[in-house]
Image (cartoon, rainbow, N blue to C red; front, side):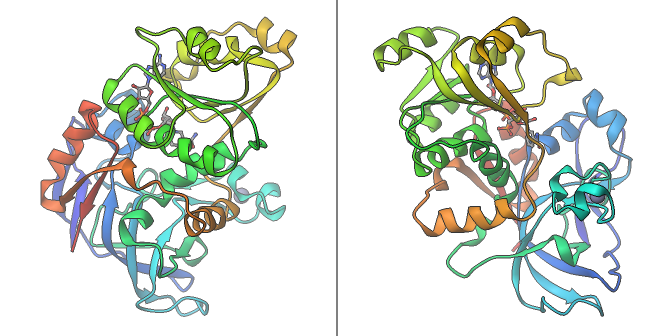
Length: 342
Ligand code: NAD
Ligand code: ZN
């Protein structure tokens, strides 16, 4: 089958022939229709330090997709051939304490599709039936293809009560941009988003941000004063992984404010003023992936009740033009990039 392969330990990704995956009795084989490119795939494309120490080569990468079930394993009774599906990219162990307590997103034995095992930039993907998520008919393929990052945004945004709250989102990447309408849909008052990339700030504005602030040349405090915000933000969603953005968030939260941290700082370290966290009584929650499968149900029901995230999709390309897609991601002049296998 055709697949996008990390074939060599150097920057790049290559279209290659690979073996159609086998399925076990509890697995499902999915024929991929559309793939989306994740920031993780970009790290693998650029072959940065994280990718070099994490990704075994050769490896079929990718984990954002929609497809149709081609075949189900002999023990799989609740899914059938022809069903339109996406899937959770975190494969959990099922037997640790958190898995047994129904908190599968906190499984310490999680494996990533397209990171630790073959991924979805391919004509076919095999995953455990438990990870398959059927897509209702009223949700189209391109939205279904971005359920994975949409789920990151939903999981982060719904960490805390948003009704009537003022929210600060740092980082207007695709996930930050999707978080804007999610917060609005869930009842937030002001949703202010920051970035240093004008293209992405414009996208965030189009997606409904109260203010999209370029922190390279605008003061967040001026924007807050302009909105009549005296005490700071109630909720912060850190979606950049940038130390100065997180520091700015901490500095502009109200006392008792709540922060959900999704952004991953390169190297894992951030130098922040812990005194502010302590004396302001801030609550900080780390976010990994999506809740299985509560986040997935909320994604569907929010879309069905009028949430609009469509504008985050800025590029649609045939799979053979995947290099253009990766280069668009690399440039930062994009939201989500979708690659079509049809
Ligand atoms: P992205 O890299 O496309 O977006 C990050 C944005 O932050 C960029 O637009 C960048 O211009 C912006 N930025 C840079 N400096 C800034 C500053 N000083 N202030 C505000 N913004 C600034 O990433 P994405 O795909 O939207 O993902 C968002 C973050 O979440 C990334 O750090 C990613 O690694 C992380 N992530 C975490 C998980 C998880 O499970 N925890 C899952 C997916 C992504
Ligand atoms: Zn587990």
